[in-house]
Image 1: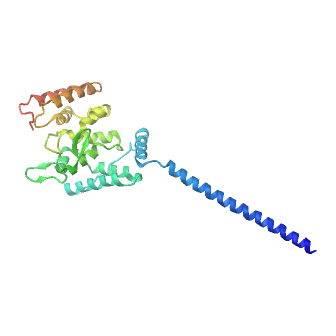
Image 2 (image 1 turned 120 degrees about the horizontal axis):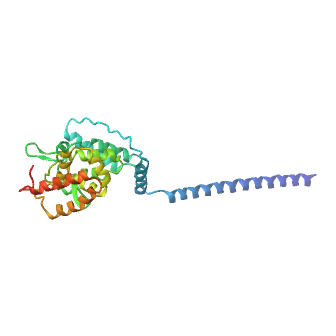
Image 3 (image 1 turned 180 degrees about the vertical axis):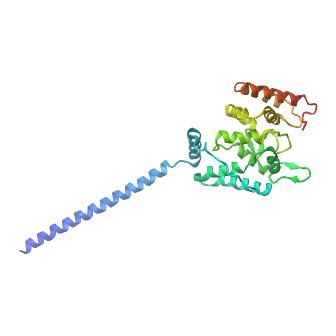
Length: 270
């Protein structure tokens, strides 16, 4: 009788040990699987700059922001507007990836809508002095396509998340009736780069405006203290066929504007 009880006890203990072993093995397997999954996640993480590029590509391909409407900021002064531009640019360049485009949109909407607005924020007036973002310090400038421009204007020039129709409309408007001034107010705020790199869209937007408005934009591109120079001559030679291939009217207005500017004795006639 005692031997039978002993045998039953041994069988129960063996069953208990078997169940315990299975629990331990299952737990270890899940832990290993979890660790492997974490390692896989780390290996497949996309660097922020690559993810940003993917988002921009998706925006262009799917037209995600084509219904983009600007919020109208009501600024009490050019200083307040300048402060907003700096704050939005800082957020757009330093914030997390999830809201970078949101800050770019706010920066774009806060950016001036006319040449006069550009002067008020970036220019210099002989009576009132320097505007809020007028500066000749190297720390406030950046190289864009081998040319130096204000850091804030340069950021505007490099925006990629704004729908083309909205972006180029504002870009043209800030150049209408523009004329050269030292430092920030020059070379059509980099618009000439857009004409060469994105000729089709630039021309499509330009064509909406009047002849005089278009000629003023072209004039601003070449304007300067001595616009009759080899650089402008070479640039005109490169730009002419690009625009001509898109729109004959714009090509003719480009030639008229360029020749009128070159014909002036002092070149700079504003």
